[in-house]
Length: 449
Ligand code: ATP
Ligand code: MG
Image 1: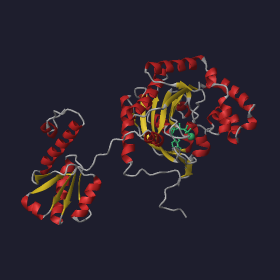
Image 2: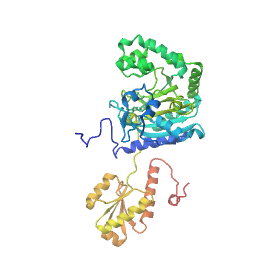
Image 3: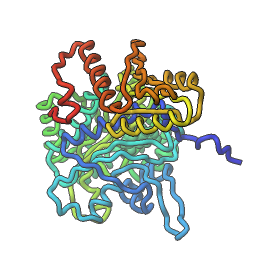
Image 4: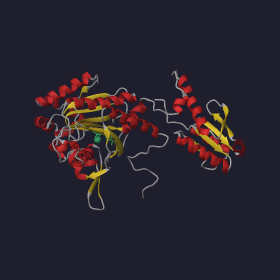
């Protein structure tokens, strides 16, 4: 019997105490993409199985071994998305987005599902941030997409991550390359793993992506795709490199990068780290000029990338990068008795209306226990309300960092507290060396900018 208090193998929870990290990363990637003109698209978690068979490719590991496919109660074959591109392309076609100004720049934050062997950086449910740029064949677009990823790492402070690029050509130049690869691997047949023997007949380029050490060693000596590029693909690849140099984005050419999905053409790239173990590819992408047609649309050159959010977090943690602290509680109002709690509820409501984080006792604990809780929340200020405070219309507001107490009127509480709280923040900024000549009244009246 399934143990219902244990999550399914290869899945993980993000706990409330940790979620600020991923929230910060998600905000950063979305903001960065916005700078490049990308708008978010949301697509379903599941699609027709055939979309992925066609869009990801029948010869890929993803389609052959890793998909979560099931029949729904209507007898349809459904698959949980193993990646984002196919669904985005489907949506682009379904909604005629090719009629809008091109290129169409779309980004997404999604969960993905692949039945893989769980290990560090490899899960069965994982998350991707992806960008797709449809409707441009220019090498400038390839460089721009790579620059977006590069900016994300810059803004997050990620260091020591290597950009590796390659060109895997178009179907035309790939014909000759496949022939050369087939000949080469045919001569090494005795040492290849079972899966690669099958790949040899179906798609020999897949062997270059095999993770087994023996196959990788054989693949390292294989003919290089860059020696087989047609003039157009070679020129395109040269231009991409020219743009990258102009944008001062360092890269290395790695002819063994082929990417895991079938639809790639011309430029492919990965951002790789050596600091998070065997699963070092944090981001992978490239051009997929044939995909839109493959899915049933008009010929549309396009490109994109996807970044593994779990791997990105692992890398940031390995590099001890800071995640901005989540906002602490601005005020905890402790209360004694029902009447005081009602007043505390009212004050908390007013403060929340002003955008502050306020809490009061919703458990019915003793004042001592409430103060202990306030401490755990890291409340910046606390205040105790009891019968005498209500009678006198004032209470003592305590600054928890300094221990300093001051009297505060209950009638004009929200306004007075806002002033005190803003003042503290400004003082904090001055302590950090920022000069502040900001006037509190202009902040309060919303006329600052
Ligand atoms: P790998 O070679 O590591 O299997 P892939 O080529 O299958 O990766 P893509 O399909 O290009 O990966 O997905 C883009 C990114 O998504 C990867 O670079 C990685 O960061 C992340 N990713 C892919 N599969 C997983 C997984 N099972 N668990 C966690 N992250 C993943
Ligand atoms: Mg994979």
